[in-house]
Amino acid sequence: MLKSQRLVQLIMVINAKKSFTVPELAEEFGLSTRTITRDLQELSALGIPIYSVQGRGGGYRLLRERMLPPIAFSEHEAVAMFFACQSLQYYGSLPFDEGAAAALHKFYHYLPADVKEQIDRLKNKVAIWSPHRSMSSACLRTILQAVMIRSAVTIEYKSSHGISVRDIQPVGLYSSQGYWYCPAYCFQRKAYRLFRGDRINSASLNLSIECLEEVDNRSVKDWNAPELLKMEKTALTVNLTPNGVRAFESSSFGDSIDYREDGSGTAHILVPIDNLSFFVNLIWGLGEDAEILEPAEAVDFIKRKIEKIKNIYE
Image (cartoon, rainbow, N blue to C red; front, side, top):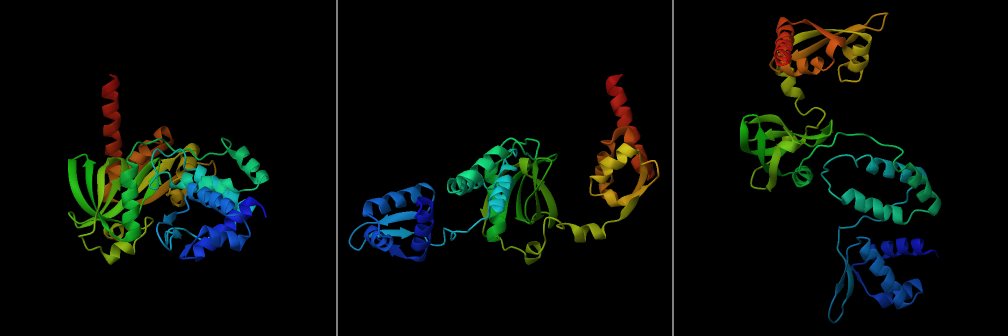
C-alpha cells in the first residue's frame, strides 16, 4: 500500500474512534508501532488535531468535530480548487487569514506527481487581478464569524463624519474593486447601512445583543432591496459613444441600453433621488464617452465638477 493511501485510511480509522493507542493501530494495519507513531506525527504536522492522553488507560484522542472526513477529488476538481484559492492571492486582506493556504498545502501534499506538475505549470499563468487595499484581516474574520454563529458585532468605524462606535448585525461580506464591504443592520441608526472594510478600525463579537431574524433572511445580493423599492426615483438618461456602450455593458446597468446601428446608444436608468450624485460620479468616470441628458440636477452636478477642475488648472 502506498504511504499516501495508508495515511488516508489512517485518518478514516481514527476519525471513527473516540480514542486509540499505537499498538491497536499497529495491529489493525499490520505495521510496526514505530511506523504508526511516525504516521501520527506526520498527520499532526499536517494539522490533524490529534493529542495524547497521559496516565493509565491513556493513548491518543482526536479533537471531536474539528476535522472533516476524507473527500475524494478528481483531477479536474483538484485543478479547480487550486485555481479558486490562488485567485485570492492578490487581495490585500482575507477574512480567513492563512486558512486557505494551509488547506491548499495539505491538499497538494498528497496529489499524484503528474497532477502536481500540471498545477505547477498554472502558477503565474492565470490570475484574477484585484487592486491591493490595506485593511484589517482580524476585523474581516470577526465579521465572518459573526455571520456564521449569528452574532452582533461592535465596531469602531471611520467615516467622513468622524469616528463612531456602532453595534451592527452583519448580513455578510462581499468584495468589489479590491475593497471588502459589509452590509449590516445598524442598531444605533435602526436601519441598514453599508460599511467599507478598510474603514473599520476594530471589531468584536457582541453576544449581549439579540439578533434579528429579518437580517438573517437577507443576502449580500439584495441586502437593501426593500428600502430601494420605497425610495423616490428619478430617470437618469445618458448618451453613450460606442466606447461608452462597451464600458456600460460591463456594469450592472448593461440591460438599460437602447442601441443604435453605429454601436452607440442611450441608457435609461431609474435611480434613487437621494443617491443621484453617486450614480453621476460613476458616469463621470466615462469622460467624453458619456453625456448626461437628464435630469437637470445631474447635468448641473457635472458642470460644477468641470468648473472645479478648470479652476485647479487655471
